Length: 106
Image (tube, rainbow, N blue to C red; front, side, top):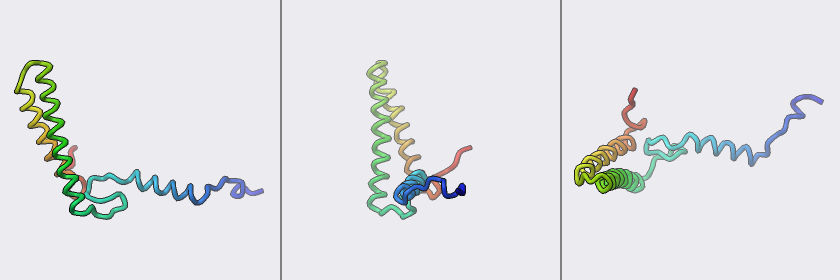
């Protein structure tokens, strides 16, 4: 008996699953493309950009409002975290719309 005949061989469907998992692990690059490299449609991209910005602003404002309620510093932390949310939303939009995922930091 040779060593190559004794090695277990995965069925084709498991090999295909492994390849799909590898491709899925490479996805999500933030380049405006689907994991398979196809460009995102205009409408889908616009919805994603709008959602990213809205969520960042709402989370920033919500955190600021909650901290103001807890610490009694109204409205200062709401204003500060609202501005942080806007800045975060803009950074997310730049990352989504710039080829290569936006500016790199060292």
